[in-house]
Structure formats: C-alpha cells, structure tokens
Amino acid sequence: DSNMTVTDKPIERDALVRFEKRQVKEPRVLNEAYDYENPVAFTRALRVELPGYSLILISGTASVNEAGESIHVGDLEAQSWRTFRNIEALLAAEGADWHDVVRTTCYLRDMSRDYDAFNEVRMAFYKEKELDPFPASTGIQVTLCREDLLVENEAMAIVPPDRKA
Image 1: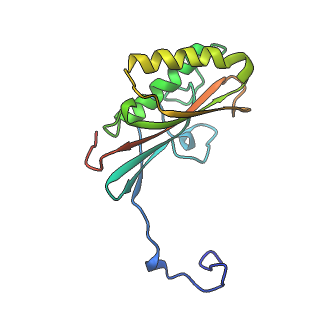
Image 2: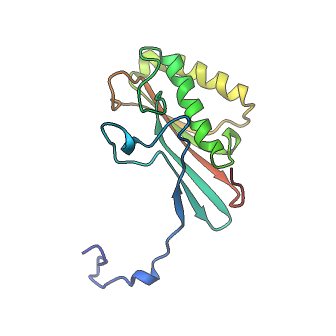
C-alpha cells in the first residue's frame, strides 16, 4: 500500500506537505510529447512553487519543432542551437531567461565525436546571452530516443515566485 511507511504505520494524507506544481507550455515552439502521434509520458517542463522561490524544471529537450518532428537531422550544431532555443522559449513562458538557469545536463549520442562541436555552440550561445557565471553542467553519452537526434539538453532555473510571463 502506498500509504504505508517502512514501519507499516499509515501516513495521514493531510499531514503530507505538497508543493504547488504546474505545467510550463510554449506551443508555438514545441508541444507536449504526450500530444504527439506516438505519445510519450512526460511533461516538457514544470514550475514548482517553493517557499521564497519557484523552481523551473525543463525535461530533456531536443531539436524538435512544435509538431514533435525532428529537425536539423544530421547537423549537430543546428540541433544544439535548436535545443537551446527551445529551452529559452520554455523559460520565457514563465518570465525567466538563461540568467536564471543554475544547472544543465547535456546528453550526446557520441561524446568523443561530438563534444567539441557541441561545446563550441554552447559557448557561443552563453556568450550571446552574456552569462557569467555559466550554469553548472554535466555531459553524458547516451542512446537518445530517436536515431536522428544527436543531442538533448535539460535545464533547471530558479526565479522569485512573483515573476511570471
């Protein structure tokens, strides 16, 4: 039973602290993956209201358009730019921008072949945004969900709770 602790004593549902969370959307740029022809069960981004601040969590975002179609197939640099722009649109939908991003994770299909090119795009993008310092980041080599995708990025931003789009 999901209401039981390891001591088998029931948890009072009213005693649980829950934080308000809501979906972040920017359908002019990209839509929810569960709205695609082949639905995927995740939310693009969530805004979580915590005492004193809001946390914006952006799921792994790839080079896809508003219809969920892969774009810039075979072009790592263009795919990288698109992932950053998609994240930027989701941030803007909540009144945030890249200056609010504190952490990113990049997922590359082939780290040894593609990292330098990805990092060049990331550096150019961060300089364009005049970020200082850069967000904390981790890079991971993975098998992405589609063969035509070479890179995916996720981000976490922190904003004051009253800042909205």
